[in-house]
Amino acid sequence: MIRINPVSDLHVDIERNGLDSMPQIDADVTVVAGDAAAPGTLALRRVRELYPDRDRPLIYVPGNHDFYSFHDKHNAELKTTWEEQRARMPEVAEDLGIILLDDASVEIGGVVFIGATLWTDFMTRSPYVMFGDAVRAATKQMNDYRLIKTGAGRSKDRLRPGQTIDAHKVSVTYIEKALAKRPAGQDAVVITHMAPSPRSLLHWPTITDLDWCYASDVERLMTCDAAPALWLHGHVHGNRDYCVGETRVVCNPRGYPAPGGKRENPDFDAGMVVEVDGRPSLQTEVVNGSQHVADIAAKRTAGNVWQARAQKISAAAEM
Image (cartoon, rainbow, N blue to C red):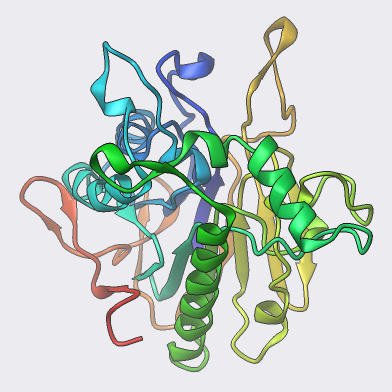
């Protein structure tokens, strides 16, 4: 059994949003499903500050905010592009001992963790909304298509829905192949920032404006023979816990501050733990009176950088 602490949408940007530390919990792996801060290089540093224990594997999957760009004459890091963050985040993650899963996988404690942002495909919309209208609404109303830049030099352009739809297809293909590739009987956990089912939407089964930017319908990946045991996601800023087939879907986002010192999501639980079976042969040891995975993430090297026992698989490797 492997114990997973899932959180997302911490939004601890420069002002930290009132979050300076996280509680001590009995978990084997912490998973942050995106949007810890903007941009992603800052998000990774903030996450490591919140989770300083390098003896526990820390997984991060990029969210949409991880690619936001801001003009700040006092902080050049905030001005960035989608391509720059995808290139720099792996380097920063390695330095910080964080396992970054951006269309990538890792095996921990006998469980395969598969991660992707999972941009939406714009298909989760009312039958009364045409595809072109959905694209135009997203372009005008979603910060993603205003604050995320692409390209280089003076030719930097705003992100376009066509690019995120293409990225969605790449991620779905990667997840599907990674699920199918694992050995029979091995449990898998899929981690995405955006929701894998319309059931995660706030007003489901009613489809409201811009819902197509928050969830896709990839439930077929949860009802196939290679379905994962658990699917973790963020983005919707409200807790979710339901099953599709035999796959449990969980979302535990912190969200934004609310008036009166409250939080947008009062149900956020920083100490949440969900359990997934590892391989029966997994060795365990007792640590502080609790069962802990002895082999949890593999060798720790000089510099406190985790090296996974199962080689991290990128989208370009053997897929």
